[in-house]
Image 1 (cartoon, rainbow, N blue to C red):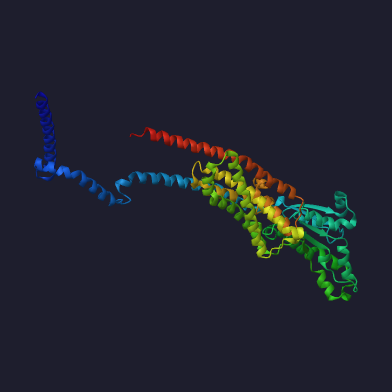
Image 2 (cartoon, one colour):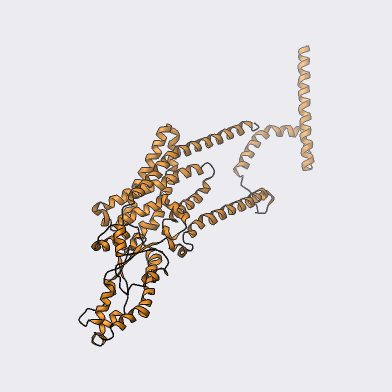
Amino acid sequence: MDASRSSDTASRSSYDEHQAFSRAIAETAASGNGSAMDPDDLEKDSAARPQLSRSNTAASESHLQRVLTSFFSDRTKSDRKQLVGLFFFNHLLLALVILSVFSLYWGAMYKRTSYYHKVDILAVIQDDGPAVQGLPDLITKVPGNWQVYNSSYFQQTYDVAQDQIDSEITKLVHNQHFWMSLNIKPNASNAITDSLQNSAAKPFNSTLYFETVYESGRDPTNMKSSILPLMLELEAIYQEAYSADILPKFLANASQSLSSIPSVNLAQAGSMSFKQIDYRPFSDYVLLGPLQVGLIYCILLTFFQLLLFIPMHVQLSPKLKVSHMFFYRYATSFINYFFMSLFFNLVSLAFQVDFTKTYGRGGFMVAWMSSWLLMAAVGGANENMLTFLLTIGTQYAGFWMIFWVVFNISPSFYPMDLTNNFYRYGYMTPIFNGVQIFRVIYLDLYPGHLGRNFGILIAWIVLNTALFPVFMKYFLYKKKQEAMKAAAAQNQAPQ
């Protein structure tokens, strides 16, 4: 009996609490909608409400859409502040890159004439007659580092016989001890005198006695435009002096015989010009592809191949042991460079570039292997830097490429002797040494520096290969730190 009474009391208490809760809901609805709902009706409605609520929620979620807003909305206020900060930071960064890196390239062409004193030019005066007596003084009026010899002094300095002077002069230019030479051969003055005094003598031909030797292949774009004009300037000065002072003296000494001299002899005696011998000519402008702009493409290609293989690297590297992962990356890169260098040279072959000038039928293979080494040298640096940039922001990869291209080409595409000594750093760059190698292959230039050129490329490959594990370990360390921070932040987040 007592148990029954206690159960009824508990039931009534629970019912009263439920009624109180229902009234509170009804009053809230009435205050919001302006009408009251009977508690009994509300109780009936509450039975169906869970199912309706679930269906309504599903329907509303299926129709959720992102609400777009204007740029100046309060919702984008923080984004606008972030944009302003990013704007100033990015433009500051762009200004620094443009002003510093681009200045490196502009500087290679700045005031080139002020560096003419570094251009070595050889002048050998084998004649000792009146035709050349004033020539050494005229040479001092022309810019350049002129080294002037007479025949005896030249023989003593270079230990050659009289009949070897001409070939030795050509050899010195070919071996790149001098940019060009002026060779005034013996008996030039006697030939002028004889043509004016002997009616049976041949007309004087200045090109047989005044000879300049150079190699346009040594610098295809700058030799004729910047260095050869120094010799042309000397030729113009000497022509003026010859017509004004030297020739009148010859005519005065031959005045008694001029009437019997053929007119062609008189005309030829008044003509003074230097014979130009281009010992290693540059005539095929297709070569500007593999010798200049094509080398920029080599840098870019090594970067692109890395981007193409990054998804595979990311997928495979976590599954490999550390030693196998390094082997995989090295092998992939060098195999890629191997085939890209082949395709690079096939383009030159398709446009009929002559690979046989220096190494005959093996020239293509030499060019291919040289391109392979060059791509490995520049590509290794790209791979290391991109690995590093992945830890701070891939958006900066473009800045590295601009720097790496300009850093390489600034001292490589212009004569080192016509730039500031600062650009001597180019002797260690991969592209400079690649240019020197390809000029030997395509133009048969002096091969004496090939050992140094190949050695520097190999040194870059060894250096990049040794540094890659360092950059990779740093990359893994940073990623591990980021993962730990993310896990810690997730653990601290309220549940």
